[in-house]
Amino acid sequence: MGLRDAVDSLFKGADDLDLTSGDIGWPLFFLSLPIVVQNLFQVLYNLADTFWLGRYSTEALSAITFAFPIVFLMISLALGVSVAGSVLVAQHTGAGNEERAAYAASQTMAYAAVISVVLGVLGYVFVDDITALLGVNETVAPLVVEYMRVYAVGLFAVFGFAVFMALMRGYGDTVTPMYVMAGSVVLNILLDPIFIFGFDANPLFAVLGLGGLEAAALDATGFTGWGIAGAAIATVGSRALALLVGLRIMFRGDRGVQIRLSEMLPDPEFGKTVIGIGLPASAEGAARSVSITALLVVVATFPNAVSGAYGIGTRIFSVIFLPALAVSQGIETMTGQNIGAGELDRAADTNHFGARAMLVLLTVGGGVIVLAARPIAGVFSPDPAVVDHATTFLRVSGLSFGFIGVMRAYTGGFRGAGHTMIAAVISLITLGFVRLPVAWVAADPLGAMGLWIAFPVSNVVGGVVAYLWFERDTWRDGNLTEEGPSTEEIGPGVASPEDD
Image (tube, rainbow, N blue to C red; front, top):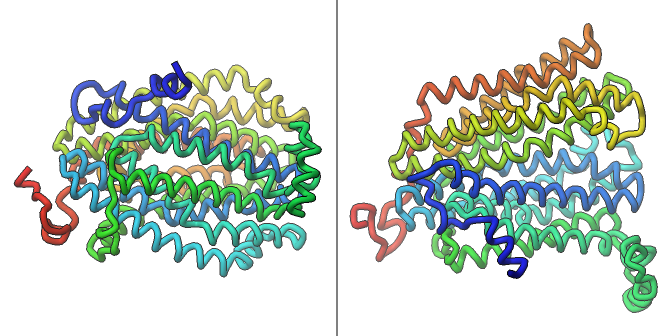
Protein backbone atom coordinates (compact mmCIF):
# COMPACT_ATOMS: atom_id res chain seq x y z
CA MET A 1 0.00 0.00 0.00
CA GLY A 2 1.42 3.39 -1.05
CA LEU A 3 1.39 6.55 1.04
CA ARG A 4 -1.59 7.99 -0.87
CA ASP A 5 -3.56 4.74 -0.40
CA ALA A 6 -2.75 4.70 3.32
CA VAL A 7 -3.91 8.30 3.70
CA ASP A 8 -7.05 7.69 1.61
CA SER A 9 -8.02 4.84 3.92
CA LEU A 10 -8.25 7.33 6.81
CA PHE A 11 -10.59 9.72 5.00
CA LYS A 12 -13.80 9.57 3.01
CA GLY A 13 -14.73 11.82 0.12
CA ALA A 14 -18.12 13.35 -0.64
CA ASP A 15 -19.19 10.35 -2.74
CA ASP A 16 -18.68 8.07 0.28
CA LEU A 17 -20.71 10.18 2.71
CA ASP A 18 -24.49 10.48 2.99
CA LEU A 19 -25.05 13.67 4.94
CA THR A 20 -28.85 13.74 4.70
CA SER A 21 -29.86 10.25 5.89
CA GLY A 22 -28.67 7.41 8.09
CA ASP A 23 -26.08 7.72 10.82
CA ILE A 24 -24.93 11.18 11.98
CA GLY A 25 -21.78 10.51 13.98
CA TRP A 26 -19.54 8.90 11.39
CA PRO A 27 -20.38 11.25 8.50
CA LEU A 28 -19.73 14.21 10.80
CA PHE A 29 -16.46 12.65 11.92
CA PHE A 30 -15.22 11.95 8.40
CA LEU A 31 -16.34 15.42 7.27
CA SER A 32 -14.54 17.13 10.17
CA LEU A 33 -11.31 15.12 10.31
CA PRO A 34 -9.76 16.60 7.14
CA ILE A 35 -10.67 20.08 8.42
CA VAL A 36 -8.64 19.40 11.57
CA VAL A 37 -5.70 18.48 9.34
CA GLN A 38 -6.24 21.64 7.24
CA ASN A 39 -6.20 23.76 10.39
CA LEU A 40 -2.98 22.08 11.51
CA PHE A 41 -1.48 22.91 8.13
CA GLN A 42 -2.50 26.54 8.67
CA VAL A 43 -0.64 26.46 11.99
CA LEU A 44 2.41 25.15 10.12
CA TYR A 45 2.14 28.08 7.70
CA ASN A 46 2.35 30.53 10.60
CA LEU A 47 5.06 28.57 12.41
CA ALA A 48 7.23 28.46 9.30
CA ASP A 49 7.18 32.25 8.94
CA THR A 50 7.83 32.71 12.66
CA PHE A 51 10.65 30.13 12.73
CA TRP A 52 12.63 31.47 9.78
CA LEU A 53 12.08 35.17 10.50
CA GLY A 54 13.19 34.57 14.08
CA ARG A 55 16.50 33.45 12.65
CA TYR A 56 16.66 36.41 10.30
CA SER A 57 16.34 39.19 12.89
CA THR A 58 14.54 40.12 16.09
CA GLU A 59 13.00 43.11 14.33
CA ALA A 60 11.53 40.88 11.60
CA LEU A 61 10.08 38.55 14.22
CA SER A 62 8.51 41.51 16.01
CA ALA A 63 7.15 42.82 12.70
CA ILE A 64 5.40 39.56 11.88
CA THR A 65 3.80 39.67 15.35
CA PHE A 66 2.24 43.04 14.52
CA ALA A 67 1.37 41.98 10.96
CA PHE A 68 -0.69 38.95 12.00
CA PRO A 69 -3.55 40.97 13.59
CA ILE A 70 -3.76 43.13 10.44
CA VAL A 71 -3.84 40.01 8.25
CA PHE A 72 -6.51 38.48 10.49
CA LEU A 73 -8.64 41.63 10.25
CA MET A 74 -8.39 41.74 6.44
CA ILE A 75 -9.33 38.07 6.13
CA SER A 76 -12.18 38.54 8.63
CA LEU A 77 -13.67 41.36 6.55
CA ALA A 78 -13.67 39.09 3.49
CA LEU A 79 -14.72 35.97 5.40
CA GLY A 80 -18.43 36.48 4.84
CA VAL A 81 -18.19 35.66 1.14
CA SER A 82 -16.74 32.21 1.80
CA VAL A 83 -19.35 31.50 4.50
CA ALA A 84 -22.17 32.58 2.17
CA GLY A 85 -20.81 30.42 -0.65
CA SER A 86 -20.42 27.38 1.60
CA VAL A 87 -23.97 27.72 2.97
CA LEU A 88 -25.58 28.24 -0.44
CA VAL A 89 -23.69 25.36 -2.06
CA ALA A 90 -24.60 23.09 0.88
CA GLN A 91 -28.30 23.92 0.77
CA HIS A 92 -28.58 23.63 -3.02
CA THR A 93 -26.62 20.35 -2.92
CA GLY A 94 -28.97 19.02 -0.24
CA ALA A 95 -31.92 20.02 -2.39
CA GLY A 96 -30.43 18.08 -5.30
CA ASN A 97 -30.12 21.19 -7.49
CA GLU A 98 -26.63 20.98 -8.97
CA GLU A 99 -27.19 23.89 -11.37
CA ARG A 100 -28.07 26.29 -8.58
CA ALA A 101 -25.08 25.02 -6.58
CA ALA A 102 -22.80 25.64 -9.57
CA TYR A 103 -24.22 29.14 -10.06
CA ALA A 104 -23.74 29.92 -6.36
CA ALA A 105 -20.14 28.66 -6.48
CA SER A 106 -19.35 30.68 -9.64
CA GLN A 107 -20.84 33.87 -8.22
CA THR A 108 -19.09 33.38 -4.88
CA MET A 109 -15.69 33.13 -6.54
CA ALA A 110 -16.44 36.23 -8.63
CA TYR A 111 -17.44 38.27 -5.59
CA ALA A 112 -14.39 36.96 -3.74
CA ALA A 113 -12.18 38.37 -6.48
CA VAL A 114 -13.89 41.76 -6.37
CA ILE A 115 -13.86 42.08 -2.57
CA SER A 116 -10.29 40.86 -2.13
CA VAL A 117 -9.04 43.32 -4.75
CA VAL A 118 -10.85 46.20 -3.01
CA LEU A 119 -9.52 45.17 0.42
CA GLY A 120 -6.05 44.63 -1.02
CA VAL A 121 -5.96 48.15 -2.46
CA LEU A 122 -7.19 49.64 0.83
CA GLY A 123 -4.69 47.60 2.80
CA TYR A 124 -1.84 48.65 0.53
CA VAL A 125 -2.74 52.34 0.77
CA PHE A 126 -3.51 52.55 4.49
CA VAL A 127 -1.02 50.09 6.00
CA ASP A 128 1.16 52.99 7.20
CA ASP A 129 -1.78 54.48 9.11
CA ILE A 130 -2.79 51.10 10.59
CA THR A 131 0.78 50.48 11.72
CA ALA A 132 0.87 53.91 13.39
CA LEU A 133 -2.40 53.17 15.21
CA LEU A 134 -0.85 49.98 16.60
CA GLY A 135 1.98 52.05 18.04
CA VAL A 136 4.73 50.08 16.27
CA ASN A 137 8.16 51.59 16.91
CA GLU A 138 10.15 53.23 14.12
CA THR A 139 12.54 50.28 13.78
CA VAL A 140 9.86 47.67 13.23
CA ALA A 141 7.18 49.74 11.45
CA PRO A 142 8.88 49.76 8.00
CA LEU A 143 9.15 45.97 8.14
CA VAL A 144 5.44 45.63 8.95
CA VAL A 145 4.62 47.86 6.00
CA GLU A 146 6.96 45.89 3.72
CA TYR A 147 5.34 42.58 4.65
CA MET A 148 1.76 43.85 4.48
CA ARG A 149 2.12 45.51 1.09
CA VAL A 150 3.21 42.24 -0.49
CA TYR A 151 0.37 40.47 1.31
CA ALA A 152 -2.16 43.09 0.16
CA VAL A 153 -1.10 42.70 -3.48
CA GLY A 154 -1.59 38.93 -3.23
CA LEU A 155 -4.73 38.98 -1.07
CA PHE A 156 -6.88 37.31 -3.74
CA ALA A 157 -4.51 34.34 -3.82
CA VAL A 158 -4.86 33.86 -0.07
CA PHE A 159 -8.56 34.55 0.11
CA GLY A 160 -9.44 32.81 -3.16
CA PHE A 161 -7.95 29.59 -1.86
CA ALA A 162 -9.99 29.94 1.34
CA VAL A 163 -13.12 30.30 -0.81
CA PHE A 164 -12.16 27.17 -2.76
CA MET A 165 -11.98 25.23 0.51
CA ALA A 166 -15.32 26.66 1.67
CA LEU A 167 -17.11 25.78 -1.59
CA MET A 168 -15.75 22.23 -1.55
CA ARG A 169 -16.80 21.90 2.09
CA GLY A 170 -20.32 23.04 1.21
CA TYR A 171 -20.55 20.19 -1.27
CA GLY A 172 -19.27 17.77 1.37
CA ASP A 173 -15.71 17.28 0.11
CA THR A 174 -13.14 18.22 2.74
CA VAL A 175 -10.51 15.72 1.57
CA THR A 176 -9.56 17.33 -1.76
CA PRO A 177 -8.80 20.74 -0.18
CA MET A 178 -6.74 18.96 2.47
CA TYR A 179 -4.43 17.48 -0.19
CA VAL A 180 -4.08 20.83 -1.97
CA MET A 181 -3.37 22.56 1.35
CA ALA A 182 -0.68 19.97 2.16
CA GLY A 183 1.15 20.69 -1.07
CA SER A 184 0.89 24.42 -0.47
CA VAL A 185 2.35 24.12 3.04
CA VAL A 186 5.31 22.04 1.86
CA LEU A 187 6.01 24.58 -0.88
CA ASN A 188 5.81 27.48 1.59
CA ILE A 189 8.21 25.79 4.02
CA LEU A 190 10.73 25.25 1.21
CA LEU A 191 10.40 28.75 -0.26
CA ASP A 192 10.49 30.64 3.05
CA PRO A 193 14.22 30.29 3.85
CA ILE A 194 15.25 30.76 0.21
CA PHE A 195 13.21 33.94 -0.29
CA ILE A 196 14.16 35.34 3.14
CA PHE A 197 17.90 34.60 3.17
CA GLY A 198 18.67 33.97 -0.49
CA PHE A 199 21.91 32.00 -0.96
CA ASP A 200 23.97 33.96 1.54
CA ALA A 201 24.35 32.30 4.98
CA ASN A 202 21.07 30.46 4.54
CA PRO A 203 20.42 28.38 7.70
CA LEU A 204 18.54 25.73 5.70
CA PHE A 205 21.64 24.97 3.62
CA ALA A 206 23.73 24.90 6.78
CA VAL A 207 21.38 22.37 8.43
CA LEU A 208 21.37 20.20 5.30
CA GLY A 209 25.14 20.41 4.94
CA LEU A 210 24.89 21.95 1.47
CA GLY A 211 27.26 24.86 1.94
CA GLY A 212 29.05 24.16 -1.34
CA LEU A 213 25.78 24.16 -3.27
CA GLU A 214 24.77 27.41 -1.55
CA ALA A 215 28.02 29.09 -2.58
CA ALA A 216 27.60 27.96 -6.17
CA ALA A 217 24.01 29.24 -6.24
CA LEU A 218 25.13 32.59 -4.83
CA ASP A 219 27.85 32.93 -7.44
CA ALA A 220 25.39 32.06 -10.22
CA THR A 221 22.50 34.28 -9.13
CA GLY A 222 23.85 36.85 -6.66
CA PHE A 223 20.56 36.43 -4.82
CA THR A 224 20.84 37.45 -1.14
CA GLY A 225 17.15 37.26 -0.26
CA TRP A 226 14.26 39.66 0.26
CA GLY A 227 14.11 39.54 4.06
CA ILE A 228 10.65 39.88 5.57
CA ALA A 229 9.16 40.58 2.14
CA GLY A 230 10.45 37.15 1.12
CA ALA A 231 8.26 35.52 3.76
CA ALA A 232 5.23 37.32 2.37
CA ILE A 233 6.16 36.39 -1.20
CA ALA A 234 6.54 32.73 -0.19
CA THR A 235 3.12 32.72 1.47
CA VAL A 236 1.35 34.52 -1.37
CA GLY A 237 3.15 32.49 -4.02
CA SER A 238 2.35 29.11 -2.48
CA ARG A 239 -1.29 30.13 -1.98
CA ALA A 240 -1.49 31.40 -5.56
CA LEU A 241 -0.35 28.02 -6.87
CA ALA A 242 -2.85 26.29 -4.57
CA LEU A 243 -5.61 28.58 -5.87
CA LEU A 244 -4.73 27.70 -9.47
CA VAL A 245 -5.01 24.02 -8.59
CA GLY A 246 -8.33 24.69 -6.86
CA LEU A 247 -9.70 26.64 -9.82
CA ARG A 248 -8.70 23.85 -12.18
CA ILE A 249 -10.53 21.34 -9.99
CA MET A 250 -13.68 23.48 -9.88
CA PHE A 251 -13.69 24.41 -13.58
CA ARG A 252 -13.29 20.72 -14.40
CA GLY A 253 -16.18 19.89 -12.05
CA ASP A 254 -15.33 16.24 -11.46
CA ARG A 255 -14.98 16.67 -7.68
CA GLY A 256 -18.54 17.86 -7.09
CA VAL A 257 -18.40 21.65 -7.06
CA GLN A 258 -18.25 23.23 -10.50
CA ILE A 259 -17.75 26.84 -11.53
CA ARG A 260 -18.36 28.27 -15.00
CA LEU A 261 -16.72 31.35 -16.47
CA SER A 262 -20.02 32.29 -18.17
CA GLU A 263 -21.69 32.56 -14.74
CA MET A 264 -19.01 34.64 -13.03
CA LEU A 265 -20.22 38.10 -14.05
CA PRO A 266 -21.31 39.48 -10.63
CA ASP A 267 -25.10 39.35 -10.32
CA PRO A 268 -26.46 42.20 -8.13
CA GLU A 269 -29.36 40.05 -6.90
CA PHE A 270 -27.02 37.28 -5.86
CA GLY A 271 -24.82 39.95 -4.29
CA LYS A 272 -27.71 40.89 -1.99
CA THR A 273 -27.91 37.28 -0.83
CA VAL A 274 -24.15 37.17 -0.26
CA ILE A 275 -24.32 40.38 1.77
CA GLY A 276 -27.31 39.14 3.78
CA ILE A 277 -25.53 35.93 4.76
CA GLY A 278 -21.92 37.06 4.66
CA LEU A 279 -21.93 40.48 6.27
CA PRO A 280 -22.76 39.17 9.77
CA ALA A 281 -20.07 36.50 9.38
CA SER A 282 -17.55 39.19 8.46
CA ALA A 283 -18.75 41.27 11.41
CA GLU A 284 -18.30 38.24 13.66
CA GLY A 285 -14.71 37.76 12.53
CA ALA A 286 -13.92 41.46 12.80
CA ALA A 287 -15.53 41.69 16.25
CA ARG A 288 -13.54 38.67 17.38
CA SER A 289 -10.35 40.32 16.13
CA VAL A 290 -11.14 43.64 17.83
CA SER A 291 -12.16 41.93 21.10
CA ILE A 292 -8.95 39.93 21.23
CA THR A 293 -6.93 43.08 20.54
CA ALA A 294 -8.84 45.00 23.24
CA LEU A 295 -8.16 42.25 25.75
CA LEU A 296 -4.46 42.73 25.08
CA VAL A 297 -4.85 46.25 26.50
CA VAL A 298 -5.85 44.66 29.82
CA VAL A 299 -3.02 42.15 29.60
CA ALA A 300 -0.55 44.97 28.96
CA THR A 301 -1.28 46.42 32.43
CA PHE A 302 0.32 43.37 34.07
CA PRO A 303 4.00 42.44 34.45
CA ASN A 304 5.77 40.56 31.66
CA ALA A 305 5.37 37.25 33.48
CA VAL A 306 1.58 37.53 33.24
CA SER A 307 1.58 38.55 29.57
CA GLY A 308 3.95 35.66 28.85
CA ALA A 309 1.62 33.26 30.63
CA TYR A 310 -1.32 34.68 28.68
CA GLY A 311 0.53 34.01 25.42
CA ILE A 312 1.28 30.44 26.45
CA GLY A 313 -2.31 29.78 27.49
CA THR A 314 -3.93 31.19 24.37
CA ARG A 315 -1.58 29.23 22.10
CA ILE A 316 -2.44 26.01 23.92
CA PHE A 317 -6.13 26.87 23.64
CA SER A 318 -5.78 27.41 19.88
CA VAL A 319 -4.55 23.83 19.46
CA ILE A 320 -7.08 22.30 21.86
CA PHE A 321 -9.96 24.03 20.08
CA LEU A 322 -9.02 22.78 16.59
CA PRO A 323 -11.52 19.88 16.81
CA ALA A 324 -14.28 22.31 17.83
CA LEU A 325 -13.56 24.54 14.84
CA ALA A 326 -13.57 21.54 12.50
CA VAL A 327 -16.79 20.09 13.91
CA SER A 328 -18.39 23.53 13.70
CA GLN A 329 -17.64 23.69 9.97
CA GLY A 330 -18.78 20.09 9.53
CA ILE A 331 -22.07 20.88 11.26
CA GLU A 332 -22.42 23.96 9.05
CA THR A 333 -22.27 21.75 5.95
CA MET A 334 -24.55 19.00 7.30
CA THR A 335 -27.09 21.53 8.55
CA GLY A 336 -27.14 23.30 5.20
CA GLN A 337 -27.54 20.10 3.20
CA ASN A 338 -30.26 18.72 5.49
CA ILE A 339 -32.22 21.98 5.40
CA GLY A 340 -31.93 21.96 1.61
CA ALA A 341 -33.23 18.37 1.60
CA GLY A 342 -36.11 19.28 3.93
CA GLU A 343 -34.71 17.13 6.76
CA LEU A 344 -35.07 19.73 9.52
CA ASP A 345 -35.24 17.23 12.40
CA ARG A 346 -32.04 15.60 11.18
CA ALA A 347 -30.40 19.03 11.01
CA ALA A 348 -31.37 19.60 14.65
CA ASP A 349 -30.09 16.15 15.64
CA THR A 350 -26.76 16.90 13.94
CA ASN A 351 -26.33 20.05 16.01
CA HIS A 352 -27.23 18.33 19.29
CA PHE A 353 -24.96 15.38 18.52
CA GLY A 354 -22.03 17.65 17.71
CA ALA A 355 -22.60 19.75 20.85
CA ARG A 356 -22.70 16.66 23.10
CA ALA A 357 -19.60 15.19 21.47
CA MET A 358 -17.64 18.44 21.84
CA LEU A 359 -18.81 18.91 25.44
CA VAL A 360 -17.44 15.48 26.38
CA LEU A 361 -14.28 15.55 24.24
CA LEU A 362 -13.12 19.04 25.20
CA THR A 363 -14.04 18.60 28.86
CA VAL A 364 -11.87 15.48 28.98
CA GLY A 365 -9.11 17.33 27.12
CA GLY A 366 -9.43 20.23 29.51
CA GLY A 367 -9.21 17.84 32.46
CA VAL A 368 -5.93 16.49 31.11
CA ILE A 369 -4.66 20.06 30.74
CA VAL A 370 -5.63 20.81 34.35
CA LEU A 371 -3.77 17.75 35.66
CA ALA A 372 -0.65 18.40 33.56
CA ALA A 373 -0.76 22.21 33.62
CA ARG A 374 2.66 22.80 35.19
CA PRO A 375 4.75 20.50 32.97
CA ILE A 376 2.89 21.78 29.88
CA ALA A 377 3.62 25.39 30.84
CA GLY A 378 7.23 24.46 31.59
CA VAL A 379 7.73 23.35 27.98
CA PHE A 380 7.18 26.92 26.79
CA SER A 381 9.16 28.91 29.35
CA PRO A 382 12.02 28.35 31.81
CA ASP A 383 10.92 31.37 33.87
CA PRO A 384 9.34 30.13 37.16
CA ALA A 385 7.07 33.19 37.41
CA VAL A 386 5.71 32.67 33.90
CA VAL A 387 5.19 28.96 34.59
CA ASP A 388 3.32 29.72 37.83
CA HIS A 389 0.93 32.15 36.14
CA ALA A 390 0.42 29.91 33.10
CA THR A 391 -0.31 26.93 35.36
CA THR A 392 -2.98 28.91 37.18
CA PHE A 393 -4.46 30.12 33.88
CA LEU A 394 -4.71 26.57 32.51
CA ARG A 395 -6.17 25.15 35.72
CA VAL A 396 -8.78 27.88 36.03
CA SER A 397 -9.91 27.57 32.39
CA GLY A 398 -9.49 23.87 31.58
CA LEU A 399 -12.80 22.43 32.76
CA SER A 400 -14.78 25.03 30.80
CA PHE A 401 -13.35 23.98 27.43
CA GLY A 402 -16.38 21.79 26.71
CA PHE A 403 -18.66 24.84 26.66
CA ILE A 404 -16.55 26.34 23.86
CA GLY A 405 -17.29 23.15 21.92
CA VAL A 406 -21.02 23.55 22.57
CA MET A 407 -20.98 27.16 21.38
CA ARG A 408 -18.99 26.29 18.26
CA ALA A 409 -21.35 23.42 17.41
CA TYR A 410 -24.51 25.51 17.53
CA THR A 411 -23.02 28.57 15.83
CA GLY A 412 -21.98 26.25 13.00
CA GLY A 413 -25.60 25.14 12.78
CA PHE A 414 -26.84 28.72 12.66
CA ARG A 415 -24.44 29.50 9.82
CA GLY A 416 -25.51 26.39 7.93
CA ALA A 417 -29.12 27.56 8.23
CA GLY A 418 -28.18 30.98 6.88
CA HIS A 419 -28.61 32.72 10.25
CA THR A 420 -25.12 34.13 10.38
CA MET A 421 -26.34 37.14 12.35
CA ILE A 422 -27.25 34.91 15.30
CA ALA A 423 -23.80 33.30 15.24
CA ALA A 424 -22.24 36.77 15.17
CA VAL A 425 -24.33 37.98 18.12
CA ILE A 426 -23.41 34.94 20.22
CA SER A 427 -19.70 35.52 19.57
CA LEU A 428 -20.08 39.21 20.37
CA ILE A 429 -21.88 38.40 23.64
CA THR A 430 -19.21 35.89 24.63
CA LEU A 431 -16.15 38.01 23.84
CA GLY A 432 -17.29 41.62 23.90
CA PHE A 433 -20.02 41.65 26.54
CA VAL A 434 -18.71 38.99 28.93
CA ARG A 435 -15.00 38.15 28.62
CA LEU A 436 -13.65 41.66 28.06
CA PRO A 437 -15.76 43.41 30.78
CA VAL A 438 -15.14 40.64 33.33
CA ALA A 439 -11.39 40.84 32.73
CA TRP A 440 -11.45 44.64 32.84
CA VAL A 441 -13.46 44.83 36.10
CA ALA A 442 -11.99 41.82 37.93
CA ALA A 443 -8.35 42.56 37.12
CA ASP A 444 -8.19 45.46 39.57
CA PRO A 445 -9.34 43.71 42.78
CA LEU A 446 -8.18 40.18 41.89
CA GLY A 447 -5.02 40.86 39.93
CA ALA A 448 -4.06 38.23 37.34
CA MET A 449 -6.78 35.90 38.67
CA GLY A 450 -9.38 38.41 37.45
CA LEU A 451 -7.96 38.04 33.95
CA TRP A 452 -7.93 34.26 34.15
CA ILE A 453 -11.53 33.85 35.43
CA ALA A 454 -12.87 35.89 32.51
CA PHE A 455 -12.20 32.88 30.29
CA PRO A 456 -14.26 30.17 32.05
CA VAL A 457 -17.07 32.65 32.76
CA SER A 458 -17.34 33.65 29.09
CA ASN A 459 -16.95 30.04 27.91
CA VAL A 460 -19.88 28.86 30.04
CA VAL A 461 -22.06 31.82 29.09
CA GLY A 462 -21.32 31.32 25.39
CA GLY A 463 -22.22 27.63 25.48
CA VAL A 464 -25.44 28.17 27.43
CA VAL A 465 -26.59 31.10 25.28
CA ALA A 466 -25.92 29.17 22.06
CA TYR A 467 -27.89 26.14 23.30
CA LEU A 468 -30.87 28.16 24.53
CA TRP A 469 -30.99 30.18 21.32
CA PHE A 470 -30.87 27.05 19.16
CA GLU A 471 -33.73 25.54 21.19
CA ARG A 472 -35.95 28.47 20.15
CA ASP A 473 -36.06 26.86 16.65
CA THR A 474 -35.70 30.17 14.83
CA TRP A 475 -33.07 28.53 12.62
CA ARG A 476 -35.73 26.38 10.90
CA ASP A 477 -36.70 29.17 8.51
CA GLY A 478 -33.22 29.23 7.00
CA ASN A 479 -33.88 27.45 3.66
CA LEU A 480 -32.17 29.55 1.01
CA THR A 481 -32.61 27.17 -1.93
CA GLU A 482 -35.36 29.25 -3.46
CA GLU A 483 -33.00 32.23 -3.71
CA GLY A 484 -30.96 32.94 -6.80
CA PRO A 485 -31.57 33.21 -10.53
CA SER A 486 -34.40 31.64 -12.43
CA THR A 487 -33.80 29.00 -15.10
CA GLU A 488 -33.78 31.69 -17.77
CA GLU A 489 -31.23 33.75 -15.83
CA ILE A 490 -28.89 30.79 -15.50
CA GLY A 491 -29.01 30.06 -19.20
CA PRO A 492 -30.72 27.85 -21.75
CA GLY A 493 -30.89 24.11 -21.44
CA VAL A 494 -30.93 24.05 -17.64
CA ALA A 495 -33.68 22.01 -16.07
CA SER A 496 -35.80 23.70 -13.43
CA PRO A 497 -36.35 22.03 -10.04
CA GLU A 498 -39.81 20.90 -11.18
CA ASP A 499 -38.20 18.98 -14.05
CA ASP A 500 -35.86 17.02 -11.79
